[in-house]
Length: 169
Image 1 (cartoon, helix red, strand yellow):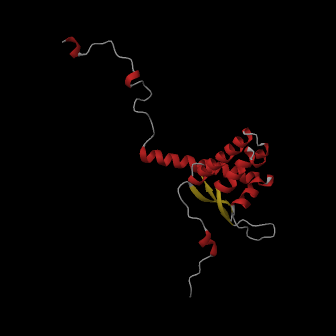
Image 2 (tube, rainbow, N blue to C red; image 1 turned 180 degrees about the horizontal axis):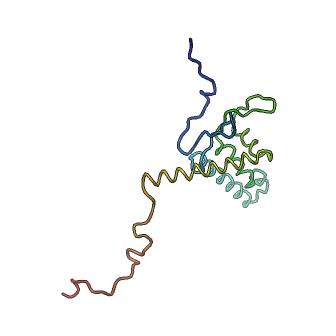
Image 3 (cartoon, rainbow, N blue to C red; image 1 turned 45 degrees about the horizontal axis):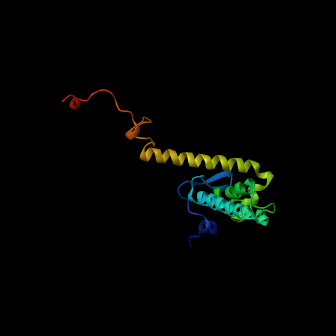
């Protein structure tokens, strides 16, 4: 008797920090990344840099550069579909065929108005994942706070008029 491994097991992305494979409906799971996940942050930065290049070309007189720019809605859909949504299991077409995850297909799925409930769920889960990751970090290293607890210190701290014992000598 042979040990059988499903092909979906081989294609499943490894789950890392700030990402979870979550059940959306019975038999349907989505790999959701938190907003602080490295892929999401790098993707957001790349989009920002691309938009800056478009704007710089426009300012230099190249009006046609605006055709290569993206609206906020396009950028947000791309980030959500291609970066926050990192994969899936059990997603099918109307014909019952398994739909393979690609960033392009995921972007199409999240931009379809019929999938608004999925988009809201993805945003809520990504936010939860990020919040819980921050809470775990705080538990490990302690809450971040300044050493002075908000009080002035150092060179800008006003000196006291009280004389120290060494001043009277």
